[in-house]
Amino acid sequence: MIRSLLLSLLLVTLAVGCSKEPEQKEIIRPVLAAQVSTDANRVGRSFPGRAEANQEVDLSFRVSGPLVELPNDIVGRAFKKGEVIARIDPRDYEVKVQDAEGKLERARSALKRARGEYRREMNIYKEDPGATSKTLVDRKRDLRDSAAGDVKSLEATLQAAKDNLDYTYLKAPFDGVVTARYVDNFQDVKAKQPVVRLLDRSRIQMVVDVPETLISRLPEVEKIWVVFDAYPEHKIPAELFEVGTEASLTTRTYPVTLIMDPPADIEILAGMAGRAYGEARDEEAGRGKVVVPAAAVFTPDTEKQSYVWAIDRDSGMVSRRKVTLGELANNGIVIEEGLRAGEWIAVAGVHSLKEGQKVRIVEKGKE
Image (cartoon, rainbow, N blue to C red):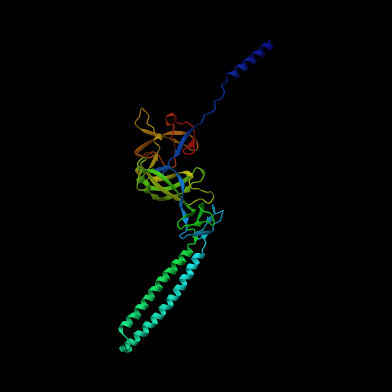
C-alpha cells in the first residue's frame, strides 16, 4: 500500500516537471539607425581618381658639352631647389669668359682715351676756334661714341659668357626627387637634350571627373578629403586647385584638380588609386531644418499621417513618432516638425517594426 502511494507521487512529480515549457529568450533585433542632426542637410559625394605629381619635368642643359658630373645612383635621390644635379665640362666656357673679360678691359681703355681726346679737342675749339675745326671735334665725338658702343656690346658678350658658364650646372628648379635618367656620365649632350626627370613631391594632385549636373555646386563644397586604396585608414585633407572648362563629349564630366599636402607618415606615389570625398550644404533643405533618409519615413495604409520610428538610446525601445514632412532634398526629406537634433531613428526595415519593440542600434555608415 505504502509502496503504491510512493510510486503514484513520483509519477505525478515527473508529469508536472515535464509539462513546464522552457523560458523563451528575448530576441533583440539589430536595426540600422541614424542620429538626427541639424547638419543632416549636408550632401556627400565621392569620385575615383589617381595621384599625380604637383610638378614633373624633364631637365636639360642650356648649353652643349661632355658630362663630367652625373652620379650613377642619381635615380631616387632628393634635391633641394638650387642644388646641382649634373654638370658638363666648363673649360671651354671658362675660356670664353676670360676672352670676353680681356676684350672688355681693352675696350674700356680705348673709351677712356677717346673721351680724353674729345674733351681736349672741344676745349681747344672753345678757346681758339682757329686752332682746330668743327669737323675734327665731331670726329673725336664720333670716336668716343663708337668706343662707348663697343664697351656696351662687350659687356653684353661677357654677361652671356658668364651665363653660359653658369649653365654648365644643371640645378634643381624646385625641391624634388629624380625619377629617371636619360644619359650616361662623360657622354656629350646637346642643349635642350633631356638628362633627368625631376618629380615635385611637396604637394600631391588628384584629378577627378565631376558630372556636369554637379559642377555648379562646387562653390558650396565645405570639406574635401582623399583616401587612397593603399592607405584606407588615412583621410588626407584636400582643396580645389583647378576646374576644367570643357566637358568630356562621351561622359559629360568636367576634370577637377584637387591638391593636398602629403602626410608625413605615409608615402603617396604618382599613379596611386583612391577616392576623393566632398561634403556640401544642401541649400534645398533650408537652414535650421533636418533631413532624414526617405527610407526612414512611412505612412500606414489606413492613415494619411507620416511617421518615423524613434529609438530610445538607453532602453532600445522603438516608438512611433508623428512627423510633418517638408520638401524633398537631394539626400532625403525635410522634417518640419516632430524630430529634434540628437534623437535616433530607424532608417531601414521600418515596416517590420512594432511599437515598444526592443532593438539594437547599428549606426548607419558603421554597419
